[in-house]
Length: 195
Image (tube, rainbow, N blue to C red; front, side):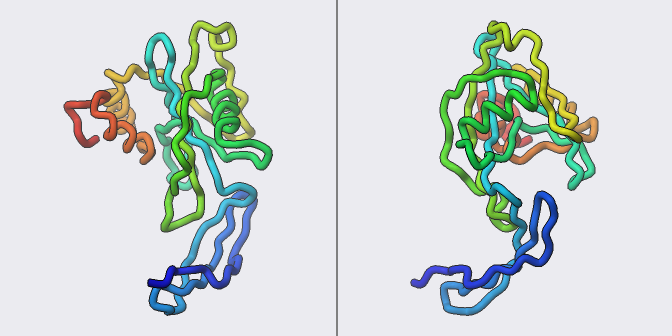
């Protein structure tokens, strides 16, 4: 069987952070088809940081306004990988910028598609531990970019499901990566197989 492949790309619209492309491709049967896709400008890879405090075991979450949803979203810290860095470096930098915490790399999963029907972005899940006893983590000060307004929350795994439920009732939206992670780890919310 033949593989599908892109034969032509055309940028339809371009902004500061995103572009819209019209992709022409041949499917497995040789049929010419079209697809609209959104591409990030400058980087198509991102790191998502799953950070846990070493002593207390709390999980670090953030809440930030996402204009595309016109809503606040509860999520893991994350950010785009700069050209001169890898996912590990990006994760530690974004953790510091968004939350003020300094973390220690533990492990990383291979890159995975974030929304394959929409864009080419690949995400690396990076697991980080934070030593809350280190002086630099005593009074964390975020280094947010202009326009960012991020709140950080440390939530114990046993209280995570209740915390998320309260935020949803307050009108926040749950990020799909956090939802999948919570539902994949039954020890976090065994009584709630689905959130």
